[in-house]
Amino acid sequence: MLSVGLIGAGHLGKIHLKLLQESDRYYLTGFYDTDEENGKKTQKELGCTYYPNLDELLKKIEVVDIVTPTLYHYEYAKKAIENNLHFFIEKPITQTLVQAQEIISLCNNTRIKAQVGHVERFNPAFLAVKEVIQNPMFIEIHRLAEFNPRGTDVSVVLDLMIHDLDILLSIVKSPIKNIHANGVRVVSKSPDIANARIEFENRCVANLTTSRISMKAMRKSRFFQKDAYISVDFLEKKAEVIRMKEAPKIPSSFDIIIENAEGEKNQILFEYPYIQPNNAILDELNAFADSIIKDTATEVSLEDGTEALKTAIEIAKLTG
Image (cartoon, rainbow, N blue to C red; front, side, top):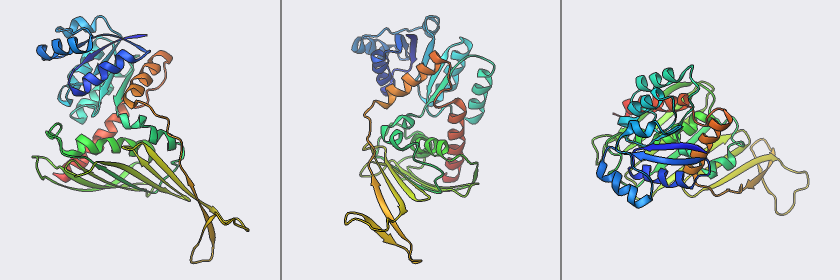
């Protein structure tokens, strides 16, 4: 087991603490939080050790889990590197590209492993169809959330859309050619709803709409590729694959056959992949531990996190 310490016992940090206690890959040494009152309260609630002195905690661990507000990611990532510790860092990787690139540079030529917390990579609905998504040429993404004051200090792009940007960039293996975007401030001082159209050099087009002022939550992505349509519901943990193939010469009464204008007949096949239930946060933490133990690449690298941040910053600039 890897000895781990956590920095930042806020809402998400407490979730991480509970899961680190459950994991069979880690031994939770303790946690640090700048708010001593919250630290002592969390220690009592969860039964894990609070360290009011960060340096004392860092001396006793092999891995650090950084779950602070983004403003402090850079500072604590540097602390981890200085102490030669592997580190898991929540998304977005840092506030700025310069900070992210410096973190990458500092990790170069070291044996330090680092993973960015883009948890949707571990969503069971996405995992069920990940291998089926091959060279999509049009992608439609909606991420709609009800209003929550937490997170409104930044644009909805950096708060929510960045989840989908990471998924998108992990699938479309082509450089971005153009980005068109707009956004509207409704209740916050930064955009609460945004739309982006991303054109890739391989001619794939992705249309993303993200809102944090919707009446109903939605997290759906639709992928269109040759002879197939794949739908992923990240919220409801459901997936659907619709394929087309040449119609059989003698179709059965149950076959769904369509005929195009040229007279070509195709059969439509519906697939509903089995979704393996999981806890995505626990899985991403365990996957990181496995990459350390087995000395393999992390699932979401610092470079991946930086590319998602770079794209999000470009969109945020366009949306105002």
